[in-house]
Length: 172
Image 1 (cartoon, rainbow, N blue to C red):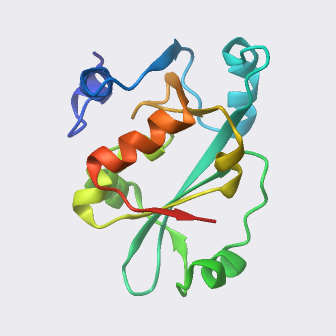
Image 2: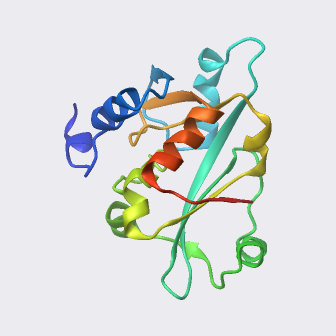
Image 3: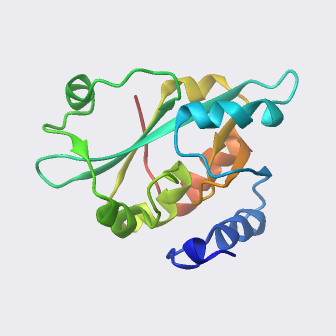
């Protein structure tokens, strides 16, 4: 485990061990650190399985003017208009949360934002929204709390993860 992962409240290895203990399957890929959608697209081909539909996501950690925190996970090529998103989720004045708040509320560093961070976010009151496109896919690609790894997890196993940690799933 590297120093960055060791500093997390829940390490990537601990998360993966928990998924395994719960009987949730995934395929783990290790790669160069990815910070942008463009970088992710460079390594996605090796993760694609023939005949399996996947959702490749980008993740936004946002805060509103009432200091409520949100994790928004959408299809990676989806355009995001923060004003329209504010209306859609019924929250005014959305802006990006700071790296300090990201660590405090999701237990991760910038560049590693992931729905799997809700393992910490649930206890911090973070509200999670997922792209409705997830209803139509077989698997979802996400970082396991660090950005030099990606897990490809069956949609139903991901939903079971959310249920296990007590995370309410909101659709967008």
